[in-house]
Length: 270
Length: 258
Ligand SMILES: Nc1ncnc2c1ncn2[C@@H]1O[C@H](COP(=O)(O)OP(=O)(O)OP(=O)(O)O)[C@@H](O)[C@H]1O
Ligand SMILES: [Mg+2]
Image 1 (cartoon, each protein chain N blue to C red):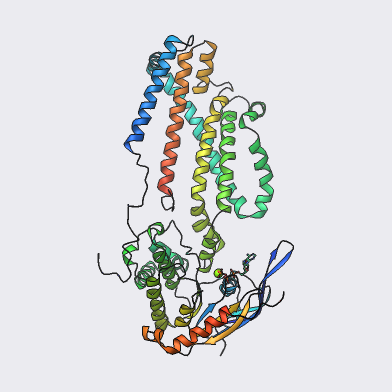
Image 2: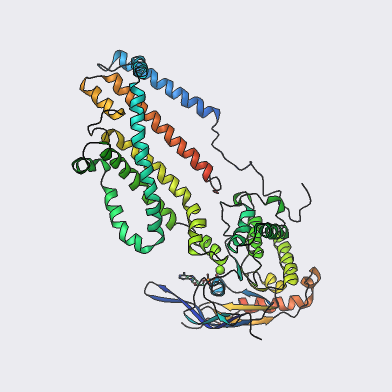
């Protein structure tokens, strides 16, 4: 290090203060143990207890069959396509609408009653209406998922804009920034953490709405498959469906979380 | 000669529930071009409000604020502001923060880089040019904010307790540095502080404000030569002025009935 006039070495300790998501080995070991114990308990229950409950092996066998004949892949792809389409459309609309509501009081006044009202209606309750109005094709399914994603992320985007630190906006103004520049260079990046949280919530509700949406006369999809299985009392298939939904949901959530951490690594905390 | 900044019977009141609160009640002050003026006064006496009006971030309720003889209409890059809170953009590195105003000024990239580097060097942050604010200490953040204001080369510097959160050593270093750059570039500086020593050390005139209602209590001339040095800081004359300022800050006449 060359000569510096002010003692700053004390302050900048790169890495030292950073608490990245590196989990201690102990926690990981406990996580694995918990999963194993869960599987064991499940096996035990299926052997001694609950009538008709398939054990992990039976379910794994069924999963193997469903993978082999391509059903699982078809269902997963169909479900993912609906969720991603609904989610992408929902957040793509939620971000600008949230920004509008946060930035212009007029827009807020006009839009907020609708957003707040529709937020109180569970998206699933829209299904009957969606079927009547949009028929039984892909559109109503994607629409319900879209609505779920939109409503949960619009509020986050809106809140993000409202909460932008006034001094940051003033700092940009005194440097000569126009309203447009302030919006693009200050408001958008400053509210990014909120938007990402909103997107995660949105993805959660999109995924949560999937199965019900697929009850609308679907030909394929995880929700459809489980409903079929229910008709034939095919518990292993239902389990395969449940586990797939859980694993995929978790994977997508982690992906979004990871992307979010990268994008907002400038934040002071975390 | 027209003063650089001029406050004329400035009143500022804020709406509060059940009426309005007068933060500043008829303040008048002229600041000459290239003058260094500091403002001291008890908390809540309207120091930041006064500065925000010169910056164009707050409009006076009555009276007028002029810069170069013209009404202030909103903020502009001719008046650099250093905020009481650092107000760095946390998602930008030190360099990008400093370049923020330069980008808005549409400078050619080469010139932009050069001026940013110069400003960063001036505050001694060259080694941390690519660091994010979260990895900087309070003093380094403050120096980055100073560099960001310097970079656009404003004719007026408005500084709101810029060294308030710093340790004594860093504070003295930044004071000397500020005086050095000021004597080179001769900007007009309006500098708020709650530190009487700092107020006297830096300024040609110290404005003492009083609270309830916020107003300018008195203005004290500091007849000490520049460059200010450690010797001056320890001189009896410095001590005398310091006491005078101290006295008018802490033994103000009873507040006017409102
Ligand atoms: N936006 C506002 N709305 C209502 N009251 C305000 C507003 N801004 C400032 N005030 C009031 O005006 C008074 C002066 O505020 P100002 O921030 O100028 O004080 P200050 O002298 O800078 O104080 P400090 O030394 O604590 O920074 C305070 O009593 C404050 O409560
Ligand atoms: Mg203040």
